[in-house]
Length: 196
Image 1 (cartoon, one colour):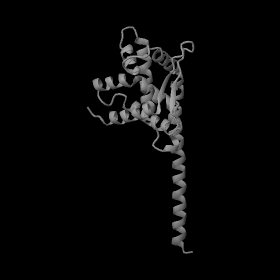
Image 2: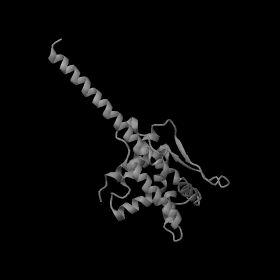
Image 3: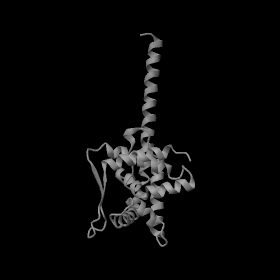
Image 4: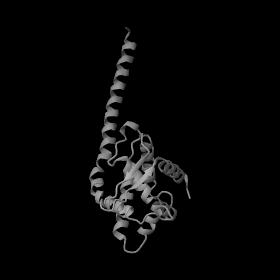
């Protein structure tokens, strides 16, 4: 073997080793970046409980979609605590959405995938109104996270997902069908494309 070939092999092995080291660093960095949100996500469990409790407790059935009724309920005077809980969760999910890894096998999130999709189902009309008022960048990364969540959920072999009413004596669980999830995914794609 001549010296040039040997030198080329050594350089290739060195480059590969440096690539592996860089990949490990990137992997650790991406993983750590999402894990830091676990503390915040845990703090907002009670807020999500309050959102689910209010949403499931709305009168049923109504002539309007339940999430539209929830938006109107949020906008009533005196619902400042619930509105604050919604804003905290919108901010958290937006922050998580902004940090979704680009590499598919690193897509670990501090919340289960269904949380973003369900919260979008509940808060979608409210967020869309805020986007009209504030501009399309408002909660855009929440939309990104909800869209990724719908894709993840649709990959499951099931036809319904349920928001379990926290008040088990009331038992007003709310179901989300595959068709509704597909419609939500379509709406999210359209909303992310809008620039008005």
